[in-house]
Length: 264
Image (cartoon, rainbow, N blue to C red; front, side, top):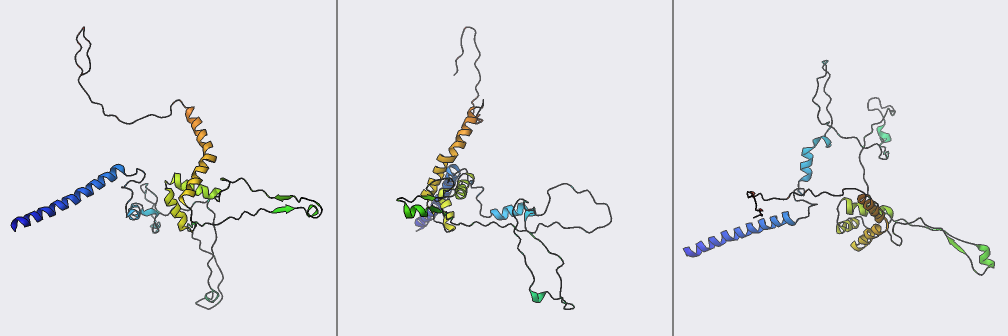
């Protein structure tokens, strides 16, 4: 019985060691073969808490406190990072949303007289709204009534449309730019981009997204590629490899007059 218990204990220890080695192997494979654009050090669960703790000045409670006037000359403060919330860019469009008191609350609580509006308090909030909509391209058609009554053929003229980024496709220039920015600037795979469209209520397959990317590359981006290629080829130096290479050092053999020293 003692031998069986010892074997069972050894079996449990070996099982724990196997689990530990499997976890270490999986971690090593992840560090070696994981995509470099999404490093494991960046993909942390509490990223929001870490960046908020590191930069409290941009938070919601980062208001600057005004100290009372003591009559003394202001002391020189060490220059550091300015606290407080950064103002929103002036080039963003502003939409005015007004909030007024109800009529039954415009009476003075002291004398119950009618109060007048003395001013307003304006605060700004950042509002980003992403919504999908369908553009209906209505092309008016014209025909001649005289030729319709008296002639054999009636000419029909249809108003033309502007040139489209991908003729025959449902994508507009704005939608195509949205897909290309997410694909190449943000590094979003097409299947995640398809999920983004799905959440917006627009089912777009990965195949359609692939046709949009390929079509835009063959139709429009090829001109940018040719211009960059021509610019690069006109340069005297395009690329320099700065990869470090390990060099094995060895002692040189003395050269004897009349003989040629060979490596090794």
